[in-house]
Image (tube, rainbow, N blue to C red; front, side):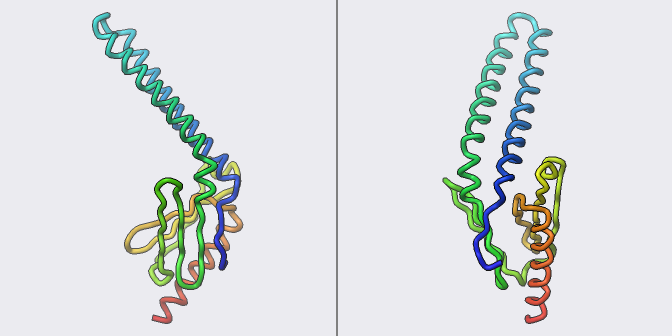
Length: 161
């Protein structure tokens, strides 16, 4: 796996679903504010109405912003694996590069929730003593191969030290 890999295009659908779940949470908060306003006396309703407007505006801005940024997020999320390291690159405005030496890899975990299962994707979590890093979603068959490769390379690197 000696080339830079991109996440599969299916991950964009998963990100869109996550954006709409976040939007639903905003709607739940907005609904709670509506219910609270019903039971408050008239002089307290003004503050709740301001809160409703703020939550509504924030919800719409977050929904639109995240949906617009999904293609950019996908274009700039890459990973690279060779016998020495795992490199993760992400970010458009604020770029982040994570380099994990193979010798530091302690564990590789595959994780698949119900949303990732929709598109047969899995999250690959690379665990080191310093923490963990994630490849957000790759095809399940590729994830299994990647896990085996990383563990094999990590074992070889530890044997060489």
